[in-house]
Image: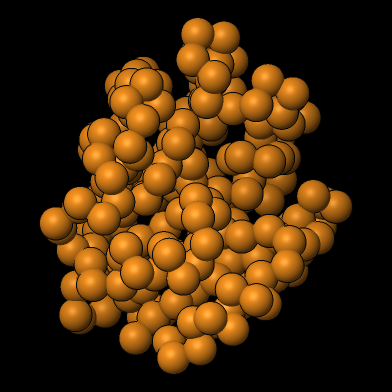
Length: 209
């Protein structure tokens, strides 16, 4: 499956964004042969499983200019890099504890000419900055993620949804949600935005104060 699925769901992308989305697939194919950041079996589903999944966040919130976002446990750069292409006036800080993954992220960012992305090898809990949103793709259980990140937010919100965590999660999540009852949360079914079977059980969890 190629980049056309992205253009189908996001028809208003600029020519530069289309070029960057197209280049994204080429770059990851090259880098994945050197450093395995995406399952080799999954690379043919790159745009559906990784890029489009990441961009589901853009269906829920259109981040305003100067929003500050941390992608915690970014791995090979998801969901941060696709969202950085989509929101060029938003600042993204991508962190992962594995250095070789951050190396790939920095190489991809440089090749795409993205000026709104900074990436560092760092453990999530050691990041001392605060952000408007912290995004992630199921790096750990929700209770653990909340414990590591719940104090890293700017107090004042200026987007259409409150500052907080935007967590992409698949499968059964009710048990984890039951463990974080004391926080405010809203669950979005990604299948409401993308009709492909892959998203049938995929959700976006927004946790906020």
